[in-house]
Length: 138
Image (cartoon, rainbow, N blue to C red; front, side):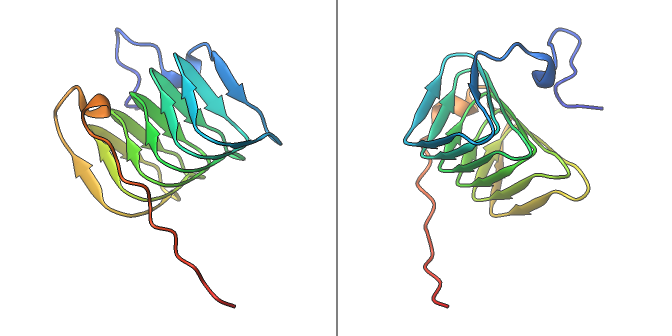
């Protein structure tokens, strides 16, 4: 049972996508989208999507994310602020998560802190701090 399959809502995976960053694309900078977005490429910067975001298996985001709903098949390094978050079995998230609902499939990887609330306006209520980057010498 998916957290997005409520009777009065269409599942995020079935929404019509208004913004697409396809596989092989690299975006250095912030992304702001008005409706639903899918990222299959690489984004280095903060991502703000008004309605919902799907991060595909080959997709990666290095930056903070603010959206209403999110499904993660790819990799996120940064903080996520959303009302509903689903991390699929191929998903990897490193950073702070603030959400109302969270679903994590077997095989998914999550490292960070989690803050859950029942506040409906969570995605618009707080600004998240940028994740600290660590230097590793080899």
